[in-house]
Amino acid sequence: HLGLFFARHAAWNPAAVLPAREGVERRHLAAVFTRAAPRFSPVQLLMAISIAVRRRLASHALFALGSQLQRESLAEALPSHPQPLIATLDTLAELAFEARDSTAVNSVQQLACRFAEQVDQYGPQALAVFCALGRAGGSRAFRKLPEDGLLGLVPAVGEQAGLLSVSIGNSVSGSTSGAVLSPPAAKLRRERIEAGIAHEASCSDVARFYCALSQLGYRDEVLRAALSRHLTDHMSGLDPMVLAPLSRALGAGAGRGPAQLACEDFVLLHALSRRAAETMEQLDGSSAVSLLQAFGRHDLYDEEFLDGVSRHLRDSASSLRASQLGDAMYAFGQLQVR
Image (cartoon, rainbow, N blue to C red):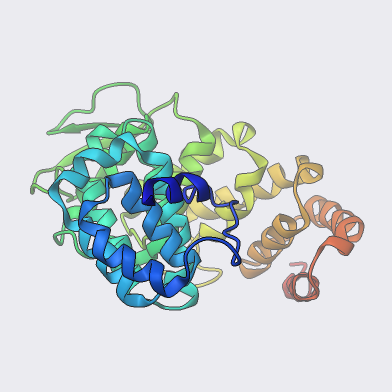
C-alpha cells in the first residue's frame, strides 16, 4: 500500500501538490513512516523524506527516516537515482533554512556523507548533486566529513563533471588552463592534488560549480581564481539564467566583504555586466534586480547595463513584488559615477 501511495503522489517531483483532503492523516502517516522506515528501499526513503517535509509531519517521523540515511547500502544505491536525490535535497532546503530545523540539516549532512563515499559513481550527475547539497545545507552540508574531506571531494566532483583535470603528484594530465589546489587531500587521504580547468568544460557548468563552492564556504582562492578566469574568457557561452546566481556568489565564501573582491572576481564582474547588457531581454525581472544589487554592492557602474536594466524593469514592473522594486531603487541609489 505504501508503494502505491508513493507512486500516486510522485514525491520526487517538486511541482507535485499533495492535496490535504486526500491520503492518510498526517499523524497516522508519521506513525507509519516511523515503523516502516527500516524496510524502505533507497528511492522510497527519499520519497518518504520529501513527503514528511512537505506535509509537515511530526519531527519524530523525519528523525526516524533520517536515521536510515546511515545505511551502508544507501551510498551504493544513490548514484543510480540522482534525480530523486536532488529533489529531496531541494525539499529539505526549505525546511533547513526557513525553519532552521536541525533534523533537516542532519539529513542533508548524512546525504552529503553518502555522496562523498561514492562520488566516483555519479559521473556527470555529480555536479548537479553537489550543487543541490550546497543549496540545501550551505556551509553546514559537509561538516560530518573529516577535516580535509571537502578539500579532496571538490576536485573529485570537478573531475567527474568534466570541469577539472586532476592528478595526484606533480603533473596535470589533459589540456587545462591551470590551477593548483594546495594543500588538499586526495579523496579522504592526505595527498597533494594538482588540477586545471579543462578547456572543453561548459561555461554554465563552471558557473554552477563556482556558485556551489561559494554556498559551501569553500575558500581555496587558487581554484576560485582559476574558475573566475575561465568564466571571464568564455563569457559568451554562459547561459543568461546563470548570471544572477553567479553575481550573488562573487565574494561569498571567500572571507571578503562587499566591494572587496579579488582581482579575478572583479574582472569577472565586469564581464557579467557586459553579458547581462547583451542578453537583457532573456532575463526575468527578478534576475535583473539581483544583478543590479550585486553591481551596486560592489560599486560597479556600467552605463549600458544600467540603461538596459532600467528599461527592462520598467517593462516588467507589474510582475515584481513591491519588495523587489524597493531593492532595485536602493541598488540604483548605491551606484555612484566615479
